[in-house]
Image (cartoon, rainbow, N blue to C red; front, side):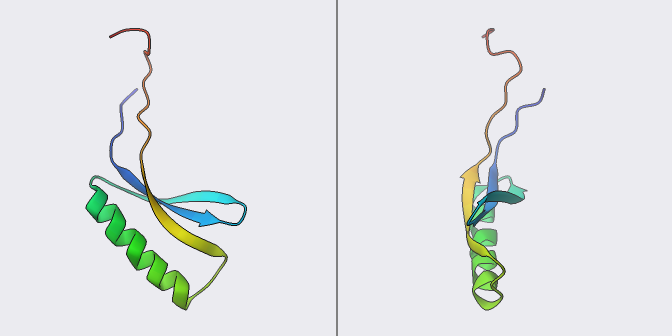
Length: 65
């Protein structure tokens, strides 16, 4: 399994979260989150806030170095 690195933009709602997009750099993700937050202020649809989170690294073989 491939390891993924980068950052994702997550929409935080009242009843959970939803991934919106993934980016290679934190700067790109923060720019998109800011843009989406500005859009959400003008067009409220239940989203509370858009946040940037690192993508979790997945490893298939945890026991080997």
